[in-house]
Image (cartoon, rainbow, N blue to C red; front, side, top):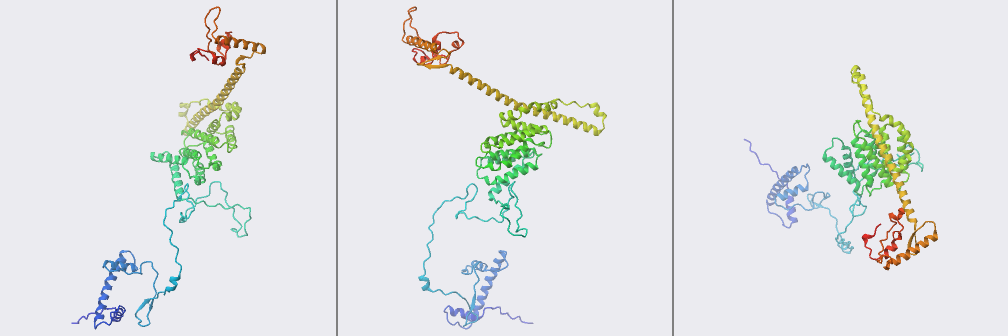
Length: 546
């Protein structure tokens, strides 16, 4: 048999134990004490490092660190290592000259005299509470209390619609410096994340509006439109909303629900009093005019595109009424565009939109644009108002399939044109009727004013009495004196010799009575003015007639 000799696993030398004991002031150790302490220290170290490796593996790490050793020491109720935490700089150990197996940390010596004579640092600022603006209208102010955090490479949006593209400079082409008269490059506009999220949410709701939209989505869309018309701080989004509306109108000319929402969006933006919309009117107006006079705005001809044209006309009128004073040329330009669309050979839906737009701009515009061309336009429109002839079923049966489909399509197109002509004629009647009513109303007002003026100018007040001018100055003055004397006698209650009764004067009219105006009464009491009524005793209010 071979005897198994126990292996010596001691890796801690006895000299290290003697050096540590001497540094602690224990003196020389006895025989065998250093050997026993070395084996015990090694056993304890093995336990600590085994636990540290377990902590390292549970932390999903592959490198043993000082924090793992500290965790193992805490598990065994021992004090952790101090000064060797995670993230600290590496310490440089140096070997001693006396004992090559003893190492120490080379630390910098501090001169106490220099430390005592050094000036004291400034005391810290007293803790206090200072209010400041976190954001103003969605924009964070650049103040020390609000450090501007640099976003991690934000995605810049494109340049606003209509902006000029930069011309390639001479440096980019490998030449000299560019000339001073060149165009400046377009600067990318970076929005805050809140505004970017708001813009994305609103545009997503507008794109999702259609026949398949749910009730919840429509409610959210109404809330978004209300927010566009009332919220402040949306001025930075106006270039992007303008570009979005222009692109969506161009790309979705046959999507009727989308166009309705776009017109509502334009109306909400121009209704917001906190947004400077004047700078973007020249970009918004083409979209509105397109929705009013475009040839076709829907997929199927049976869809109600007429209401969209009415909404666009109302929006045009609202824009002109709100911004017409600041921009006097906006209404004449729109009027010329609509008149050109009406007088040219365009389809009837375009004529309908032009007439509705001119009608929305007011009766004066209708009088200056439609009325001079009314007869010529009616000569073109009246033949289309005749109902189309019915399709003969017997003739259809005798045709082949291709000719039958062609005849049915022509009959349907004639019916649609007839309906369009009826719609256009109704819009024309409304516009011309409003213009005629305005003209008649103004003529009646002028005639009534002239009558009142003439009636008032016939009476003049002299010596406290009103007399009617008849062209005889002396006769009028004598008549006025006689009337005044008679009224003064009656007001004192003079007894009439013939009847012996006290005469109570009648109530004087405030204006000329009907009887005196018709010439049926010669009684001066009927012609007294308000001066006589003011001095008439025993006259109640009920007796006074106007």
